[in-house]
Image (cartoon, rainbow, N blue to C red; front, side, top):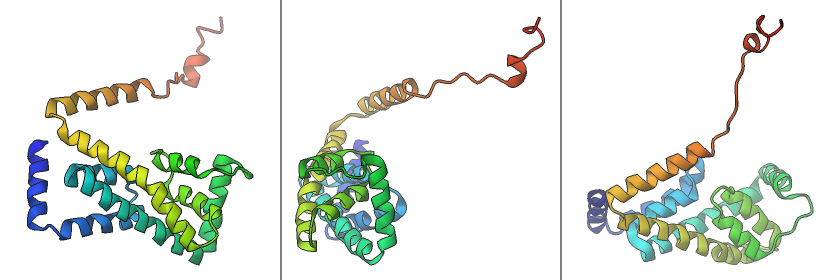
Length: 192
């Protein structure tokens, strides 16, 4: 792991301007590749460190939010679909405060642009949306980038232990079902 991070950082020094630009562009194409925001921000922490990773992630995530704003204004049908999804998840008349929206933004399993719909509904114009978008993206960028920085400090055997623990928890949280075939349930031996 340390060798990979060292190689990535060495590559960054030779292409010091291209890497941040590519990282920010990757934030913009992320929705089309179905890559979670958290994964990219953690990667930013691994590659660029906490400070620069958080700055580049904040720029990329904010640009992604602003591009989404323009897309959603051009396609009202898409806005309606997101709005219906918001109503299904949170109720028709539910209004969230800005701190609640910030918490939703940090939650990894809530769709990033669904939270942007809340911001669009809270604001009156693009300027307000851009301001609230930057403020709501700041905790997201710092939190997940710090995870990346933390992962970088781990030794390889710690990573394997952490991965093992995640797999064990994943196994324990699985859906437990008993599948019984029709023939086994109504076997002739049981009907006597």
